Amino acid sequence: MQRSISAGDRLVIDELYPALRRFAATVGSYDIEPDDLVQEAMVRTLRTRGLSELDNPRAYLCRTIVNIASNQRRSFGRLRRALQRAGQDAVTIDSYPSDLDDLEALDPRARAVLYLSEVEGYPFDQVADAVGISSANARKIAERSRRQLRELVEERAI
Image (cartoon, rainbow, N blue to C red; front, side, top):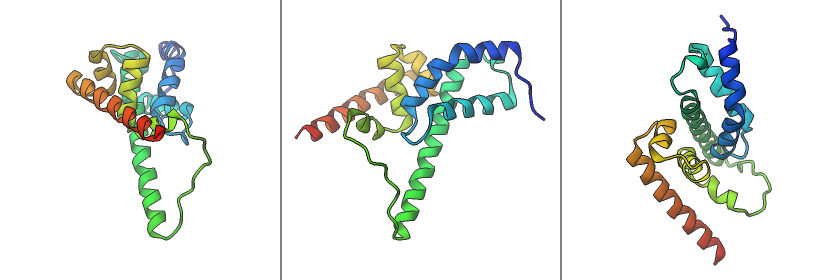
């Protein structure tokens, strides 16, 4: 049975969609369209409840987007390893070196923490709520991710 989207849900979607799309573009892999991540998160949520029923729909949808992106990253990794075992090269896309390649080295949760804290300027308690971790863990992930990015940029500069 399909749920119809209520007027309240439509307002939530209209309000949150642009910010969620930017978030999904940061958290998701290059080969995943941000709109697909956002829409999948909304569909999964709307199957069980209305968006307007949630206490914090943005945080809930951000957490859902991170989970979907993490699952897809694991699936792509399994596929890549299976192709290598079969003696086939994984499909690669020609790309030019950039700082975005360094971000791709981080897992989706780490990219989410950095995006929400550094770009959006949210305090770590709100970042933690959006990603589904503790505030202390969010700080630790941000610290480790910054260090990892710094090391990647320095390696490339050499």
